[in-house]
Image 1 (cartoon, one colour):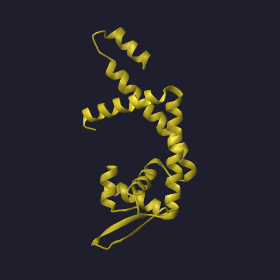
Image 2 (cartoon, rainbow, N blue to C red; image 1 turned 90 degrees about the vertical axis):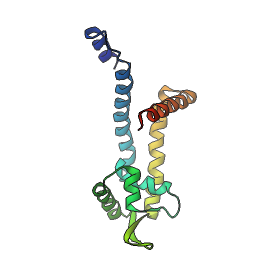
Image 3 (cartoon, rainbow, N blue to C red; image 1 turned 30 degrees about the horizontal axis):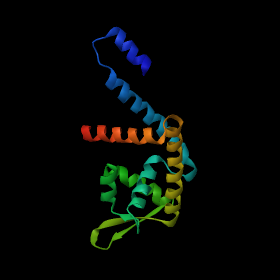
Image 4 (cartoon, rainbow, N blue to C red; image 1 turned 120 degrees about the vertical axis):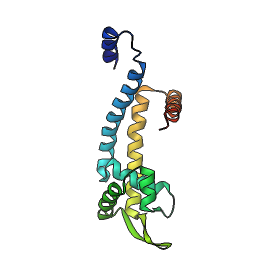
Length: 159
């Protein structure tokens, strides 16, 4: 990013490239960490998208059950995208779908015992990768400060 912003400064010294430097680093960091987290989840047999479904059910607390609609809303997925993930996870025995006892047209998605084991292992592995990346460059105070600054930026952008 330093080389890119330096090139812009040479050809367009009138530009303020600080936003490019900030967001360019965020994009690159996101891509790098996505690859590392994918590798951390691989031994558990799930992709990041599948992990997100399992983690959403896990965070819901016992009995680890949500409607497909609630999952779609939480993960900002279309119903078609959600159905594909649920199909794969159900075939793998990580969750089950059953009729909603309160809505004849509705379904409930429930994390299986195996799904609980997988998500608990995968979340630990993913956090270890993230913790290692932070510790390589930042102390605990700096990491907390960065988290706060990113929260502030996200809130300001409406993300």
